[in-house]
Length: 52
Image (cartoon, rainbow, N blue to C red; front, side):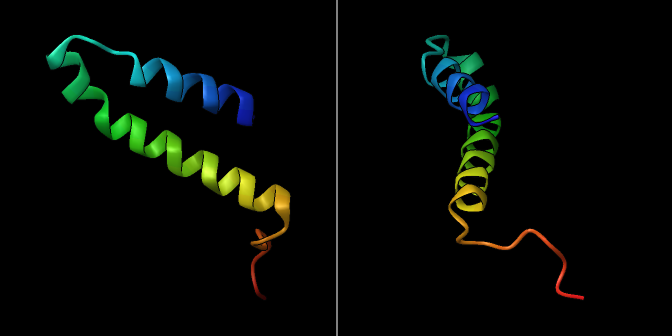
């Protein structure tokens, strides 16, 4: 999962068309947040189980 997110982030960073770049900024932010969450889950820094 993390490889796919890293690849998606890299593709989004390489967008050169200004209109396209503005359009995908939100997607890039979301992909980076998902990657950070996935890494934190794998490292055990966060617990994904509900507290109850």
